[in-house]
Length: 286
Ligand code: C2E
Ligand code: MG
Ligand code: MG
Ligand code: MG
Image 1 (cartoon, rainbow, N blue to C red):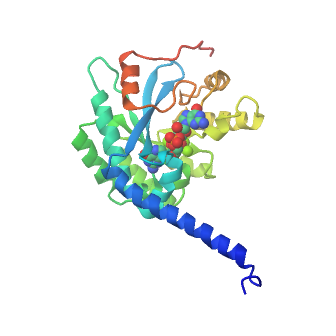
Image 2: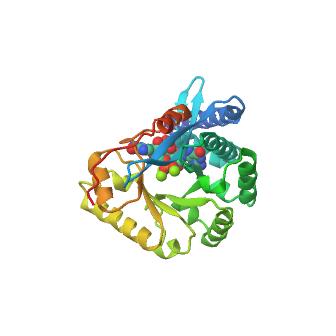
């Protein structure tokens, strides 16, 4: 019987599927406990001003240090947390931790810098999101203009009308909003001017070959020009080389983030950067 049905292949397939489902189940269960056990941690990546070379903000990036599996990438567990809904409590923890950390960084004599926090689609769809953020700001004492939210282009275009009213609600709190991974979501440009958005983050897939691929160079130049005409700032993601940096400066991109200056690092390293007033020295050629 099993021969006729290609039994071995079938069995193999099922076993593989079970293994995958089991792995999911184990991960999901582990993720449930990760919060309580303190296995989640935030790293921070500095954002630099492309005119002055100074650190002008940071992005909080989630890390999961699993006791047996080691460091698990957010690209791996956030989609799972989205599916199960766990992203909502996890996202609240991220917001609270990032706001508390940024409040701790506020010291006399240090510039007040905003912290950017990534929001998942599921969080953005929560009707009480603005109340949650208001409560977290009150609990941590952080001023609203020192918090920025990053929402991906693909999340924003799920439901344009709902997105626009949620963005207005968030704007009313005094926090800034950036579109993350811009250029990957195929949104119509006509939507863009309807979103009350402060900044556009140019996806690293366009930045990577900026210096060798004329198409990418053209796209990035166009995004920067368009953002400027709409009164939005631009942030280039994934800047790894001096060539990329020089190109972005020449197009008057406002900010950059990337390994060229710093990978995402634990809070203590940022504290040191702030204390020692780290900056990138470059020749300003425009
Ligand atoms: P993202 O928000 O677009 O973050 C940028 C990603 O690019 C980060 O990956 C960062 O470490 C990485 N990166 C920064 N500079 C460079 C560079 O020069 N070269 C390269 N190759 N990569 C660079 P990470 O930390 O693995 O995060 C991946 C994604 O996971 C994030 O993309 C974001 O969508 C999501 N994520 C991270 N933390 C959170 C969170 O707290 N909540 C939610 N909802 N999503 C998060
Ligand atoms: Mg981001
Ligand atoms: Mg991004
Ligand atoms: Mg991304």
